[in-house]
Image 1: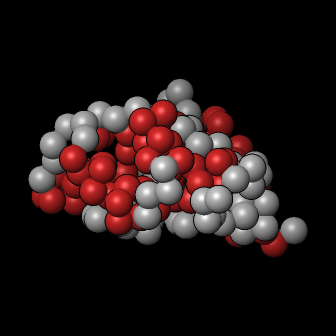
Image 2: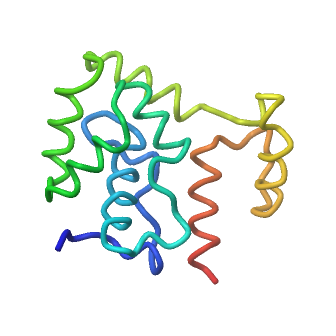
Length: 145
């Protein structure tokens, strides 16, 4: 059995948590492992946030999940990610991660209404809240209940 967090009882790691310089990666690993163990709760693996990472690296969610199915550790997943898809320098990874952390869906007219509604549930100002900060607040709210 693959060891995982029970996402019905606790959130995955924050999108801000960097692994090998990549934001999102640790959270994506947690969701993938929990999915494989039937403990993913309300979370979704291979979702639009995960696909920010997959798109940047040019890998597929199914290929990523195969690494987790094989019992890969965080470090082994990182080695696989660096070896597959588009080759990225440390500077490119840092720049992408920094940009992803600044992403604010409120600035996208197609996402503004949705994001404003989600931020309102958390008492957050959508114009000043990043996607990652909203996800962290949502995690805290979910597990406060």
